[in-house]
Length: 366
Image (cartoon, rainbow, N blue to C red; front, side, top):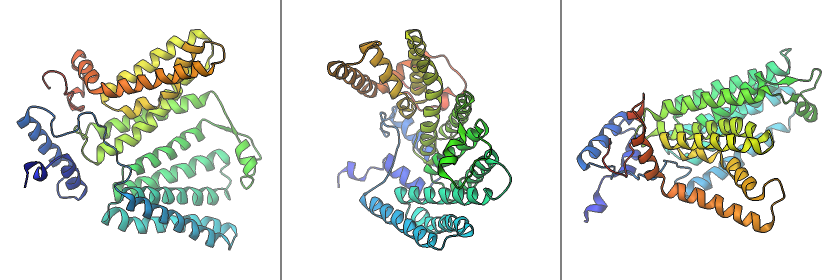
């Protein structure tokens, strides 16, 4: 049999970690040894940022089935009605999701069905807690905050039990809701049972930008904590960091670039461009394209202003805007490894630099 068919590669090592055959620390040590022996990062895809949504159509098929099943159970139980049932139904769905995850997540290690289950579980906990707390005298702000915090704790338990990276994304969403609850003013006297009144209770404030900034910094710190524990991006820690970087990038870019660009006027264009350049440099340093992707809307806005100015873009202008935007991301993605290698070599040593992914591709390695 040819050697290339029997070679043990990065995918095999990830599978061994997922199956519990070796630990992530052992896998990192094996990878480091392979790199030392080869003298380069040949055994890993240098241009790739690890991401796995599903492994085959079987996962899609089962995920659809689980969504329909849980929806049917919720519909059947809701026929009974009553406030007690409205509290019990979501809790029962959460319990079912936990029970099924023992098979689909722990035994079958199916990613997409597990994502459906953790979403059903956390949503069930949130709705159940929200309905229960609405009967108390906490007030809308207290109810929203307490329900979100309960959901954060419940999702943390899920992450600890099932080690599913996507569950950290769900946890982050509820953490964001909790922070927003602290920075949001509510209209007194609103009735939680009325959807329109519930929506009108939220009065946007300038402090919400500060809330997004606080959450974004927290999510970024959490993402880097996971990333620095998995330098070669082969295990669960790197996959968990990916989802936190998605949240951190969206929160930080929308807070900084959004406030600058939203101020109006050409004077804010340069600061916005500099802010986006800063995000791009950080994304290159930590080797996370997912963080920069969150700024695509503002990058498009800058290109629009550069092409159309303060006027309305014509069809021709839109064609130019799309070409420039597409060329920017295509070139950046194509030359990502080389740009990162050059940037990392130009930067002086700083704390944690040696724990970031290796910057191979140009010249000698670290």
